Image (tube, rainbow, N blue to C red; front, side, top):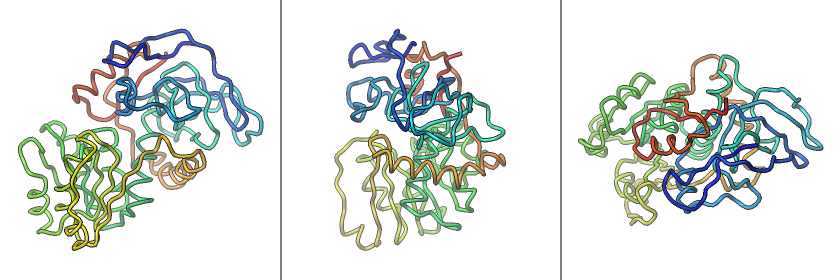
Length: 326
């Protein structure tokens, strides 16, 4: 088969469409013939040499795919060759085939295109596990999403609105904010021109956000604490703004607030399977009904993965960038 390999740490041009050995499904795994994968920030970090795959995972980039089951490993039940699926991966999505633990498989939701289903596993599992399973967003609460027009952001807006929460977003252009508004965002903040703490305070009459989903890390840490409501929960899922920040514990204690930081990729298979099962139970009906949808910016041939990485580097996209094998 062919897969995207990384010749050496560096820019997008180190991504090569190479002939490699086919994977074989181990016991408890299935082999998926890949139709599409998606570009995630973690893939850019891996390309640069900063984010190695977890032990035992494929060396190729790619944290999610859609496609069809080509073979079943020993002990797998509930799935059949030919089933259309999407899957959460520890790596290996930028390839024509990938072996996946059966617990990380999801059926393609009815009404969702097979290619566009590749836009779902990573973002839905990330949002559901952080915003709902960990931070416990409830109806009537306010969620602040940084990077509202990203793949994560567009899904977070929709899922929060589906449970009748109020949604505030930050984004860097009027066009991105308009896309967020169309998805249901209530409070729109241009982080290039406005201070999100002040704007959120105005919009909520000083209350703040019950939950903040943050992809920036250190750069926003202090202001995120300022923006939290009493008993608020800050969920950190990215470090685009740095890895080390100063935390005002007094402010955190005065608000009786909580800070969590998680990554999905390195979790044990059993934890990933639990998240996937929760997503199938709670989110898949929303996708099948059309209440929630994948947001896709563009499709690019997988052999041209470097182009997809440049799009994310430039941050001009809205929603997900997909890589297709067909």
